[in-house]
Image (cartoon, one colour):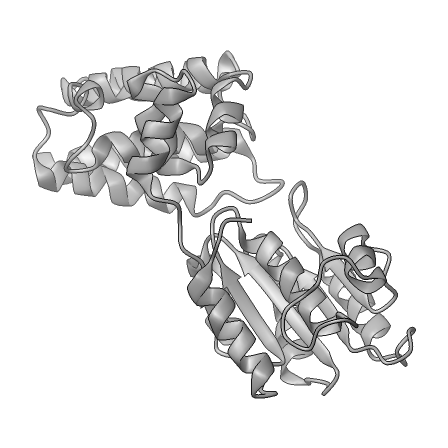
Length: 313
């Protein structure tokens, strides 16, 4: 976990004053779960009153997810379902399984929970138990119900410095274009290298830039057809690459972007870039576990054509 001094100080002060909240929402790109896990260890550690030792049996069992009064729900592959929340609630209303223990549960990437599951989470949070602490994590707080956010203490984690990430990527052998792109969408050098070496990375980046070039030349329908044909028919875009595709579009559409990206959007004015960016962000916001990638591509195609019509009326 990266050093998150301000977030750590906030949490430690709450422990010192015995004012720990019954629910937290941790917002961050890549450190959120690590921070949430540390918080769970801190709340249950038998060796330290403030913070976590990380080495006692309780801290180790939390790390291994074998502690009886600690649970983790994750939505990396599939959305969290309502029944999972119901089961979690049933588990946590029972008597503590371990002596001298409070109860802590983490819901990772809560934005990917189904609407029914989010409503169940909300009901769970509305009935706080004095010895239960809920820790939710998200990288996209705009997709979390406002009613859930209002019942949690928000802890915002800091992202790594993009300039330092870019320089570190260059040192690790990435070319400037890849280093620039990945320093803006990932939060660690390790993640940057992993993505750059993944299957489909280059084909996805190439497709995004080719589509942008066509939009830049006002070949709107040609760009849309290319995106649909190569993305859907040739399967360049799937659930593992669609997010990257959208990120390439967003990075390139920034008002100030890397020169090699700028050549694909240099004929667009700022209003056009902003319009495209809003529509790409709208599609990106719809990405969830189990979503139909082909439908997202078709929706983006529709939005691109509508954007063009807006500025030609």
